[in-house]
Image (cartoon, rainbow, N blue to C red; front, side, top):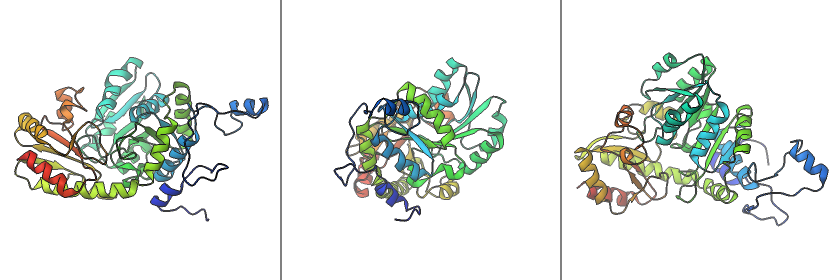
Length: 390
C-alpha cells in the first residue's frame, strides 16, 4: 500500500493498532493498568524514555494510542493526548502551558465550565483572562498585553452557534506570538480542521459527536509535537487519562463519524429552515442558514453546519418553559452530538453558573433554546417541535 494520504473516511476506518498474534480484524480492548518488561535493562530503558513503549495506562495504552492516531490524521496534527472528559482536556491543556502571571485572551462565547475555569479558578494562580466579543475580532489586538500567552476560541460557539473566522484568529496569534487553541467540538474534525487556519492545538470533547451515541465521557487534545510534549508531561503526572474501554468505544465510533455527521447536518439544516418560517419563533441561528451573520465564514471553513440549532421562542421564559414541558419525542438533556435529538435550555443548565449579564453579553437570552439535532427521521423531529410550539 502506498504512503499517500487517504480520504477522511478511509483513514477513520483503516487507522488501527498493530494486530496481535491472533490476527483479529477489529482491534481488541486492552483492559490492563500496566505492562510487563522482559528484563531489568528493558525496564530501565523504558522508564528512561529510550524506548517508545507502553508502561502504565495512565500515560499510554494501545487503545488510547489508536484513538489518538485516528484524530491526529483527521485533524492534520502530529501528536495528541486522550483525556477522561472534554473538560479534563481543556483544563490540562491550559494548565500545562500557563504559568503564574500569564494572560489569556478568550472569546466570551465559550462553554460555561470553560468560562468558569477562566474567571474563578485560574485567578487563584494569578492567571488572568480578557474576553472579546465573538462578533468583534478587531478588538482582540487591543486586549494583548506583554504577558499574553494564549488565544482561545470555540467555533461554532456553545450555545449561540456564532462562527469565528479561524484564519483571522490564526493570523493575529502568529503576529503576536500567541499559542492559538481551538475547541473544535461543535464541528468535529470531519467538518473543520482548525490547524489548516493556524491553530496550534485543537481540543475536543469526545463525549459529543465523536462518540455520537451518548455512551462515554472523553476528551482529546492534538497539535504539534513541541506543545503536545508539554501537555503530555503535565497529564502523565496529574492523571486525567482516558480509560482503555472508552478509547476502544471511541475508535469504533470514529469509523462512522462522517456518515453520521452528514445526517446530523442534513437534519439540522432542514429543522433550521422550518423554524425560520415559524410564526412562534423570534429568531434562529444555524451556520449554514443564509441569514446567519457569519454564513460566508462558515462556508469557507466548514464542510456543513453541524448538529446544533439555536433559536428563541416568542414570549420569553414562560413560553420557553411551556415549550420544554410539551416536548414528547425529543430528550431534555444537557448533552449534544447524540444520535437522539436533545433540547436544552442554556440559561438554566449549561450556562447557569454565568451571571445574567454575562449570559446576555454572549447572546444567551432567557428564552433561548439549543437543539442538538439527532439521527431520527426529520419529519418526526419537526412534528414534535411543531406540536410543542403549538
